[in-house]
Image 1: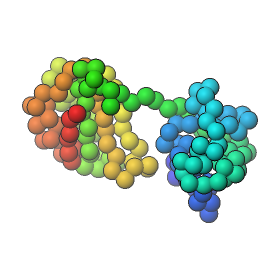
Image 2: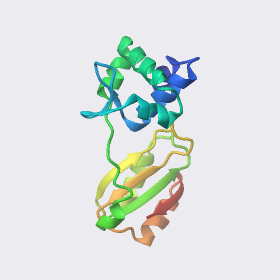
Image 3: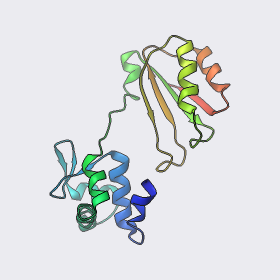
Image 4: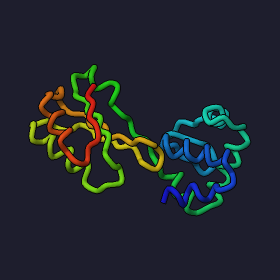
Length: 167
């Protein structure tokens, strides 16, 4: 699906940059062509500055999104989520960052959560990078308690896991 969306901007690399940013950040495009996060409007000049294009490129991109039924449905309904990765240690929560052997494989999340549950840790949040947007996607798992060293050792034994780090 993502390649179909990006494909609609083939030959328009500046607009593709804008679309990738909107998708990565979960920004919506409202019915008036404004880029929003919830009810907060994000100026097109800010979007343009972030991706290194002119504001008019952002204007043209949002216009194109509103003219295409598929793009319109996607961008009017996408939402961003908060990641607790950086604040979890301050709250006494554990953070495990998993780099999978191959993010396209099936069952990685199941493998990881099965091992975590053996240590009686509750998972507060699990967020994975989309391999379409990230060269080296990772899975971040926030647990209700600090991570014991034995858990890291067990996770490293999984065939689906390339590396494990904790914060």
